Picture (cartoon, rainbow, N blue to C red):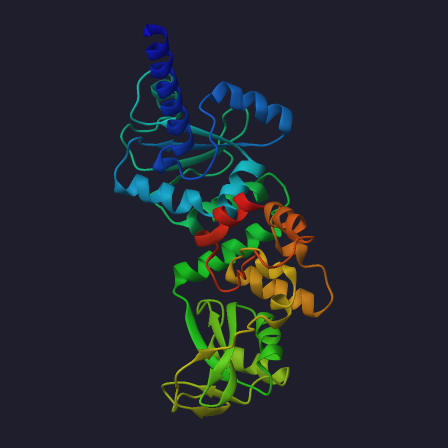
Length: 334
């Protein structure tokens, strides 16, 4: 009986440890971090990948938790960190080895998240990232480090930086009518500064909702781009007196088309969670009979290859759904 009880207790503790590992700390996000910097240096030397170090308070304050929950859980940021670097976490509120590493880098204890990207000699590749707890801050730091090291920045990383920069700048939107909104989506995807499109209807007219970075473009430039491609008949705008060389109409209620991103919608790529800009680029590539894989990450391509031979019945259309909301569920199934 004692033996049975003892085995039961050991089993319970064993399950507890497994759950503890699987649940992880929210401050770490979804990244699979190493805890041994010496091992990371060995891996860095053998793989020719630099080391990305997260100095994090665990358990941490709301800033630390939000950084893990949001920034360090974005699917494409997680992939970039794990595939392009050797990721290591250092607890900034612990003694022992963690404290030794903190002292080596001159990092303060009990601090908000800090990111350093270093080579296998622990020399900084770029300036440390601190005080910026946005997804844009991290992906731009990742891309800058790759550029400094003369390494190719993956297209999916470049697109993500462009999209997150637009969000940080304050995205603006407009609605332009044309003869065919599917052609309109293709047209405006090619306009500089545009980061998202959606086909739909407004006041009985086919229109495209266009989201753009106001620091990269403006309404006049977008309209001129559309006119050059015969995709700008009128603009729906609150300020109809605004000086834009196009027929103007007061904005009405926008109703999205059920087949927005028409070419993407009619392909199996529609089941792959993407960012809005990725979806635009993929839709355009498919319409031109080009391979859209260049705009996707290796894990997105892996997911596509896994589902391409499946029946569609149990797959869900991912167009228009933020990839952070569905990625981990979709990836676990594929």
